[in-house]
Image (cartoon, rainbow, N blue to C red; front, side, top):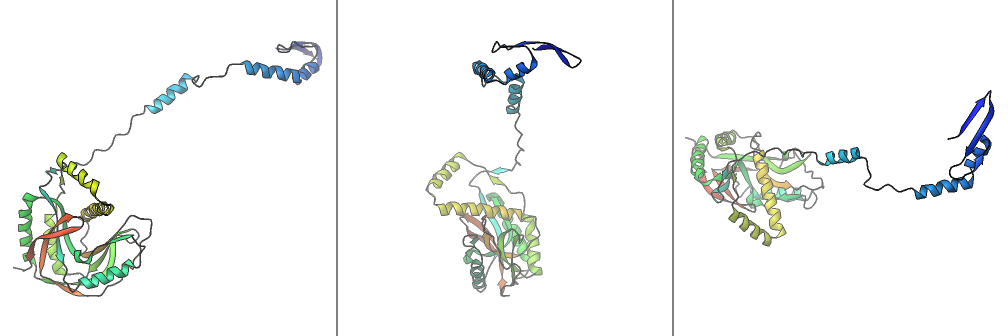
Length: 310
């Protein structure tokens, strides 16, 4: 501390001794000159070098406590998954109700599919084989085997609500919308008998039951997965996606259609001539079928019900 007094703007006394350099100054100008000297600067640098450096752990306790509290914040609770009624694996079948296509209309579907395939990036759409195309009326999903007899009885009655009908191809369109297409299809022209039949079958739709997973089944699945090819895995994923989309369409207004392709989740933009008409070919529908999906996009007819109005 430098002590000096000032009276009427004049310096009366001034005495200062530098504690680092032991230099005595008699007036303020000398003191200011000493503070700017090289010797004084070196003395300060030497003093700083001798001072102990703070350790990394020498942080304020409040700061440590705050960081600890941040780490110990409770995690957000996950929403409970919706409960589904499990059914024993092996006692279910994946079913859907549909109309088959005649041999006269399949070539038109095949021609349209090839035409559209040439207009989109390669690999952006998984095209349905012509032999597997059909008109889906209702997707039932996993169904307990002991309920199949009830479904068959209901379909037998539903088939008596209309006579054999004639359907006509209409135009190409997609689900859910044209900006983000997921399913490409060829539609059918409005038909009162088809609407009546679909309405009669709709009561079969109910809550989807999921099969429970048994340890033996999971082990067999894991063993099978080890030997499956990349194509098999892709087919399984596509099949699961197809089932999910079919379930999502249950509550939507029924749109009679023939699925011809499913858009893959790629960055490539898929745009087809949505709304364009295809060849207005007509085909006869004499019966309705109950199908079972056997995996890998394959399916078989469990039973057929001739259309004949009582």
